[in-house]
Length: 290
Image (cartoon, rainbow, N blue to C red; front, top):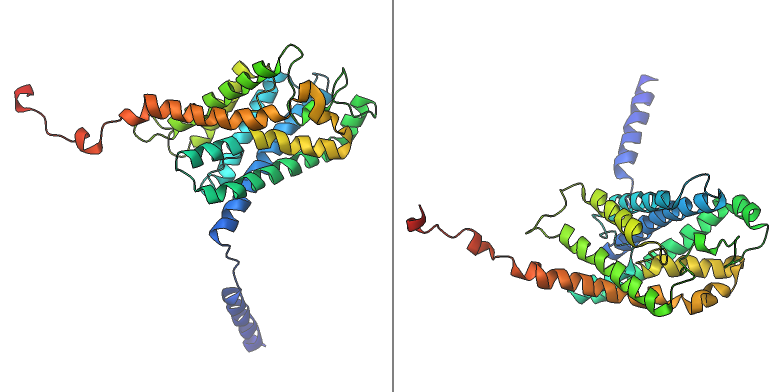
């Protein structure tokens, strides 16, 4: 019997060693990482909005939404950062392509992963908060009005905001985002401490929300806005999600990539292009200065 036990243990060990491992090609790894980081970020971010709205302010405020989205972005960076870069934002991906930091052929993969992650996150939050949303809205899924709930998922402009004003708002907000992200990654300046990048990126999102969030909910991200908006159109809010705010839906799609390109470009022109060459930093001192 002792021999049979030893044989069984030996066979198990061989089976364990010989078990086939699943290796994904690079594009699959990047796509899955970008999808999962976006999904987690959006689920936690939208969840913070749902909690505030359906709780009628009893479970948080606009500030807690800012904190929620900031921490959600930080978690997303941790999940996919070293695999896909965890852009979680098509405007960021587009700007990186413009400046040669991401191949153009990969842009469709990033956009699809971000859109799918955002769409599925909206569906998840709707499912988790289904009873709360139904109770709060009285069974009526509306886009505008006192009991509107579409704003849990996508952004809408404040009543006073014109389309032009909103366009400028989104260009500027995304420009600030990308300018600061470029600075945080600039190894020749003052980059975020290694291992702490996610914290600084999350704090940046919180800061933008606190300072630039009231006009239209600071989408600063086309896929973050369009994916959940598409879900709400399908889930019962209808085509009003595209008509509200004088057809607001296209503004985050068009304005944010423009802002991202401008923001990264401004940092490069004003700061990055003027860093001394490595050889200049190690030039010998003039003997007369000693």
